[in-house]
Each structure stands twice: as C-alpha cells, then as structure tokens.
Amino acid sequence: MQLVTRDQLGWPSSAAPDQATTLGVKVHYEGTPVSTDLQADHSQCVQEVKDIRESHLANRQENYSDIAYNYLACVHGVLFEGRGIGKRTGANGNQDLNRAHYAICGLVGSDGLTEPTPELLSAIRDGIDLLQANGAGGEIRGHRDGYATDCPGEPLYRWVQAGAPRPGSTSTPQPSEPPADHPARYQVTINGLQYGNGAHGDHVTAVGQALVSQGFGSHYQVGPSPDWSDADTLNYRDFQLSLGYQGQDADGVPGESSLRQLLGYLPGGVPAFPGRQWFQPGAHNDYVAQLGRQLVARGYGQHYRVGAGPDWGEADRANVADFQRAQGWSGSDADGYPGPETWRRLWS
Ligand SMILES: [Zn+2]
Ligand SMILES: [Zn+2]
Picture (cartoon, rainbow, N blue to C red):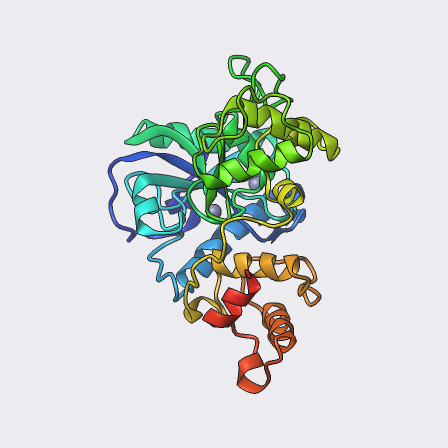
C-alpha cells in the first residue's frame, strides 16, 4: 500500500465528528470532468486532492469541517488519507447515510479521466481493507445506492457491484457478461425507485407489463408481479439485447435510458424540491447535477459545454431561464433560479 498521510499533505488533524463503526464503505468519484493530465503526472493528483479539500472547506451550504472523504485514491495506486480512520464522512448525501458508511473517492470523473486503472482499484481496495480493519462493516456500496446521484460513475459502480475485487486476484471473478443461467442479482435506484432482484412495487409490475406488451415476456411462468424476480431480469435482458446493449449493459438490470425507452417515461414522479439554497453561485451538490440532467432530458441543455455537473454555473442558470421562459414566464419568474414550480414542471 502506498499511503500519503494528512501529515504529508500538510493538513492538521481532522475536525470531523468521530464515528467508530459503520455498516461498510461507499465508493465515490469526483462527479465533474477530471483532466487526463493527472494520468501523466502524479504531482497533479496531489494537487487535485488538496484542491478538493479547499473546495469542501469553502462550501458554505455543506458546512464541511474537512475534506468529505475518509480516503481518496489516484490512478497511480496511491491512497490519500482524507478524514481517515474513525471519522464520520460528509460525502454520502445526508447524516443518516454518513453514519452508515465511510467514503472513499476514486480520482476519476464524469468526463476526461473516467476509466479507473487497476492501480486505482487496488488503492481503493487498500482503503476499504484499512477501514474494515478499523470498525467498518462488510458492505461495499456506491454513493448512488440509496441516494439520487450518478456517483461513482458506471466503471467504478460496475466494480463495486462485482464485490470490489482486488485487480489480478483470481478468487473473485472480474465483471463480465453474466450468463443467462446466472441472472444479475443486484438493485439500482432510478428516480427514487428500486429495480432488480428483490425490488418490490407497482412500478415493478409496470415494467413487467411493458416487457410482455413488447414481446419480451418469454421467461415469465405466471406473468408480471410486483416482486422483481430472475424472470424479470431475464426478460429485461432480452429487451436490452434488442436495443443493441452488450456485456454488463445487457445484464437485465434497468438503466435510466433503457427504462425510458421501454416505458416512454421515467417513473417516480416529481422528486421533492430540495430548496432554493442549493442553486446559487458557488454551490456544489448533487441537486445541481440532478437539475442539469433533467434540463438536458427536457431539451434545455444548450448552454452546457461539457454536460450537467454538480457545480452551479451560468450555464445552469441560462438553461433554467430558457425553460422558465418556455413556460410563458418573464421578469423575476424567469431569472434562471429554480423554485418549487419550476422544479415541478421540469418533472411533469
Ligand atoms: Zn459521491
Ligand atoms: Zn497519482
């Protein structure tokens, strides 16, 4: 393990609250574009980690006492000590989630440097092992498990779903196309609703009915039900294959875009408006990213250059203003800052 301590980063001991035990560890990524320059120059990784801490300390909305993660890992296999052992994370979305799991961030992002290297996965694994030797439970999850966010991105999330195996280890299989007789058995949360083995609800029935109506019901013995079973997974897999999805993308567990194509809309209704305070200059949070993705989905993303992200910017404001003007609003009603009515209409 190549560990860089807080001391070596020049940081004081963490002022974050103590947290002796958790259910496990959640894996994160940066959520923003990350420069590929990091790959060529490890000193830029060190600077990136320092910048993340600075931005967290400057974030008034979250009122962080320290960098939010317990550890961070770079593509060169170096593990950086964030809050470290025995400290509650600030990264999982809310205090209940922060108490439940520690947090490790892989230094890859939504654009640019997006693919974790084997060295990065090894370093995250080092951090997981370290935390599990010091009070963390056995669960390994992604930030998106239980919270509405893309984090930790598809490549890292697939690795998490595979059990976060140490690269090169032969005992744990690498993620690969699941054979039809071993259906994938994990859940995803899309728009606040669970899908995948064991998920339950009317929305599960709705997926089954849509599959049947489009000719993908061959694995049902009794037909769609509110309980997601292997038959749902196998039917959904047939649907994904018909869309041209391959490998892990066709494992029978829905993603947002295949679900939208199947149903023609995304179930889950209007998410609760989180409050105006999350959408202001300098804001950095998942609500901003959620808003941005919905703007893009509704065709109001023209001011984004690299896509929606968690940092509130002029592009977000301009896109929201476009949407507001399209409602026939003007003046302060179309100032580009979302309120409850803008939010409701965006999801309606
Ligand atoms: Zn995250
Ligand atoms: Zn590095």
